[in-house]
Length: 449
Image (tube, rainbow, N blue to C red):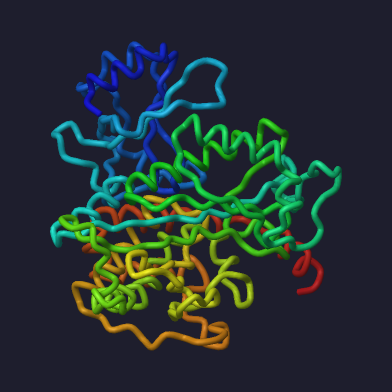
């Protein structure tokens, strides 16, 4: 879509306002809201500006102090809307549109530590090899009773039966139907916003749902996941419920993941390079898995970005604890589903649903890219329970950031400036978290030590 076509789209639908969005490091929507006609007049210009410090903002809203990447005076960057991302915002009573933007400095240089640019950088590396990644995310989330006190544990909401779920109801049809009004609004909102979701299932946790997306271009899918999270929260709020993509919102329930299915096709032919002509695993496929095995652990800050993320990574928790791979094995970190050669793919089961989709896709694809570049052979596939093997993923955010900082090949692929900025943001968040005294500490240490 050209800018002229975009202007016609906005004018033809009598759009009242346009939300111009950029994802920050945490995947939170930042940006500006313009009247529809002012947005049309701004197209092709550089008037839609923000400070570059937006990309040094923590999940708490704090800013990194003494950053090596963003300046103290916060240089202006301008937003360039991507015409192909324009969509209606379905929950407003008047016609409102949303559009995802890229960020540029005033000298026309891309803001290279902006998450959308990081993913584009990785995709460009594959394109230079004549390859196009294909991804299909699966996103889990919880519906919870409204909670205004952060010290109070979350509870499942009341469903249509008038009761809270108390046990695990994985794939339960009646359990999923408990939240039909919310689910129907999610489907309606997705259709209006052109978000291409596939199936829905009830997951193992109480009021935990999973939505699968159809496979496609990583940038398009990252945009869809980014917008989908906003959409689900709004659909839940309409019914007096909170939807959360926290990795581990409940103490005694499984966490929420964002499994990422991925494959590579030749740009010229569309052929899946993960399978040979006879249908066997190709060398590229094995090298790709080898790269995931070597670099997933240091890429964990992008797949498990928050202190809470590491509570999900636990033995026998429906989440992997290592980077072993196996065929149709859901206990490993890297699962190869049973499929035809044309659909040969590997599923990264490590990422949490709290991950920024742009950075999670960039990270997993970067690991595979390094496997191809370095021709890394994988370990033998695991048969049976992979939980019997050692815990090899980082156990907390500090350990993950340390490993990421010393993974030079990974930082090179993702971009050195991005790596510095991301580490600054996450170290700031970790320092803020360390200042908080938890209820567990008050309960168990106050009168006992």
